[in-house]
Structure formats: C-alpha cells, structure tokens
Amino acid sequence: MEIRDLEYFDVIARTENLGAAADIVGRTKPALTKCIRRLEEAIGATLFVRSGRGIVLTAAGRILQERAGLLRAQASEVQREVRDVATGAAGHVRIGMGATPAQQILPNIINDLVTSMPDVTIEIVIGINNVLRDSLRSGKLDLVVGPSAVEREEEFVSHVLLTDEVVVAARKGHPLLRRRFTLKDLLAHRWVLPKQSAEQRTWLEEVFRAHALPQPQVQIETNSLYLLPELIAHTELLTFMPRRHLWPQSGVRLHEVKLAATTMKRRFDVMYREHAYLTPAALRLVALLREDTRKRHRKRA
Image (cartoon, rainbow, N blue to C red):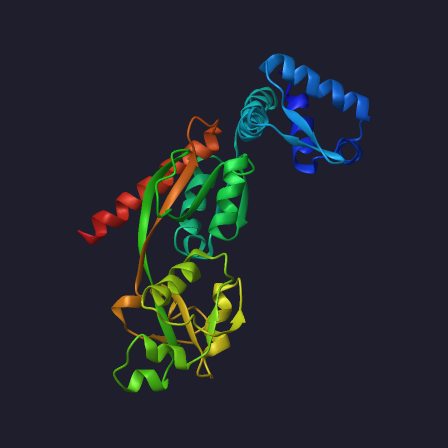
C-alpha cells in the first residue's frame, strides 16, 4: 500500500463522496477510483459500497480507516527521522503542556536544556490536555506534560512529574467562608469555570451528578487560568482551580472553600507515543523532567 493512497482513502471515507473527495485532494474521480481499487487489491477485501448518491465504508473499510492514521503517522516518523539526521535538525523538540506545568516546571527545565544543548530549537504549545493529547497521538507533538488520564492509555509511555490538587475557591470574605456549608450550598452561587472540554470541569460536574444535584450555574467560561483571580476577586462567584494558584503573582489572593468532595487529586505526567521517534533534544528533555521530579522528592524527604 502507498501512503498517498491511504491519505486519499481517509478523505474519501470522511466525505463518503468521490466528487467531494476529488475536490479536496485536487485529483480526478477516476484517479480516486483507481486508488480504491489498488487498496482493495492489496487488502483483498471490498472497502466501500454504494449508499444513495454516495459511498460508505464496509466493515473491512472501517478497520482500515482506524489503522490508516497510525500507518501514516509511522511513515511520517520515518521521514522526519531521516530528514533530521540528513539536515542536522536532531536538536528540535515539540512539547505541549497546560498552564500549571508551564509555570511550575518549564522555566528551569528549558534553561537546563539550552545550557546542555546550545543549538536546540523548541516549540512550546500551551493548551487543554485532551487537545494536546490528540496532537501527540497524531504526531504533531513529541511530548505532552499534563494531567494523567483516568485510565491508562496503552499507546503512550508516561512518567510521573508532580502531584496537584484542584479545589473550589472564592474571594476573601465570601459568605461561604464564614459558616459551615455542604455541597448543595455551593449551588447557591454562580461560577467561573474552564470550558466544558477541560478535565477538571468534567470532574467537578461529575461530583454534583453523583450526589444527585444540579450542575453548577456557570456565568463565565474561560480558557485562561490566570484570569480567574481577577475575575472573581470582587464578586460572589466561585471557581475551581489548582490550590497552588490561589495566590498568583498578581497578588490577588483567593481562598479555598474546603470540602473533601470537591478536592480533585491529580498527577502530571510527561507522555510520548510508545515506539515513536524522539529527537535527541526530546530525549534530553524527558531526562531533565524526570531528574527534576527526583530532586523534588529528595527535598520533600
């Protein structure tokens, strides 16, 4: 099978229409028909059947679509490794992470990496964990530092870097801080929360659902952790954020609304795809991250 045929096959499978696929990839319908035939001959099975004015995948076609992305990624890995060796670009690393590890871990690590590899080039992407994982899975990133998944992901290798707790927070003098309260009492106030795709919001909403309570009423959504203190410092709003960020560099301090049920324990890992090609710079960065973790543990001990 040719990689280009697999790329065209993926577009055909997603559009379920040869004409539409031809427009996207810039080829003719007969050329894509030949592409399908070549793949079917290689597989020994029919990949598409007609459905109305379009075509749909057969069971064999669905399996190929699932595997084709991995095959294309592996081919891209080989091309990149050969190109890096040929051009001397083996000192490049692409890393994605959330705001917390970027603030807590990254500065010293990057300084150590640049010191040990002066010619290294680094691409840093700050984003939401599940989006970064998708980029890692597709080969757009070499490494991701972020909260570990609830269930182990066999496709990734993970090393623990730090542990963290996410808690409900409010401004100084908030009414909830003056009395005893329950989980239900939190619903009397509106919230500032990350977007629904964020894992910590999903976890919080599940807590209320598990106690047969309504969801928190979100008044403000944000994808910036550092906006939260400023947003709620002079309001009755509640938020859900890492305890270590309750007193940010801006000096606007928030206070923990202590409740065991809403204390989310999480850990941060450095992750990369199993069997993926990692540049020497990426391997060095993993080693520095793990060494930093060992230093933290020794200080605690």
